[in-house]
Image (cartoon, rainbow, N blue to C red):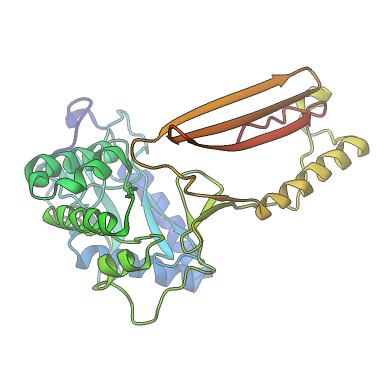
Length: 360
């Protein structure tokens, strides 16, 4: 359980209910035109209340209240949560305040600073308290990580193999790690699962290039139908990069928009002035070439071993017309064994605008 870190006294808060009310009215109007969106939205907040992550607030107001506007983000292709209701913790009053993250209890003293408006069982608009740390707010990552570090301090001695991935392999709520053998990997995964569960933080969406390890840590939570990774790439923290666990390689995700750009600063055009046909054609050719990146595959493991020496050598050059770069990863596994991996960016014509390419 945590308290919210306030910049100043909550007594300085101005009015926030009217802004939240207008936002709710906008959502209710959207419900009328989209029944699927409406049902998923209701289901999300119903579950929120059933899990006691929000509770009906009393009618008497003993402390200043801050109301968070909320809206829905619909992801039809999501394999888990198709609808997520987002609470806007940056909505202003006369004073700003930092706030929270979910899965961790917030002290009841601060519940009045986490209010939302929602319809109750009688279809009346009522005030609810959010009782947990709420995502989408400034203090949420700090509070969640602070609790995780406290969990390591309190219980880490029981599960020592989980400490490195939680301290060095953590990216917000994602945890990354690995080992040189499947046996070591399984031991680390089990320690990680047990340490997080010691704090009531179950891990989900496990991915691994070792099916045996994956089965060991997800067997209890797996759905009856088997999960195939053949056509199920996993996004990593690098935007646009996909990991195919079964074959253990990285590939690029390409989202090519059909609409073209209508302005480039090097051409000294006004913001709404169209490009010349020549420049438009060159840009379309570049955009079409980018689609070929989907065929580029890079192995995730490059031969690194414990005690191996890794060197990264980079070379680049540029002019007003073009730029190019190449990177060499040199892996020294012993005195007589050397591996070299390289990646390069070919010369790129930058005459048509600020199109920059970075080493991959």
